[in-house]
Length: 99
Image (cartoon, rainbow, N blue to C red; front, side, top):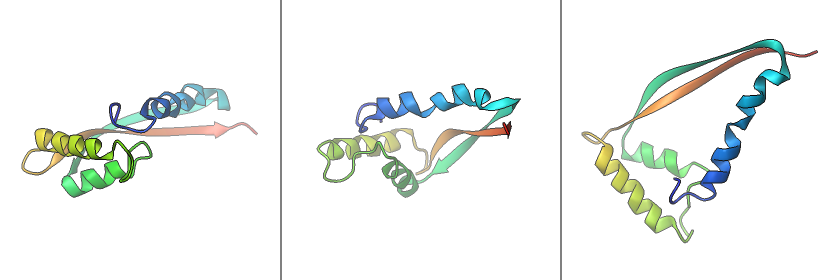
């Protein structure tokens, strides 16, 4: 996505900044945890997930064909028996709002 995505760097730069400021929104009662996991995707699920991202060039975009070839190449290179395993991380936040 960093090579073929539409405004990928702008989205990544702004997307996680809110987490740096979350504790400021609460009265010191803020809890955060992260749970690692794995996601197993076949080609249709991987392509579907990737095409749903806002930074993905869509059909008709000048970079779409190059992106589509690179996406298929990535899947073919890193999948095993037609399944691509990707690491995931679930962020859990719990806090008490200021009144």
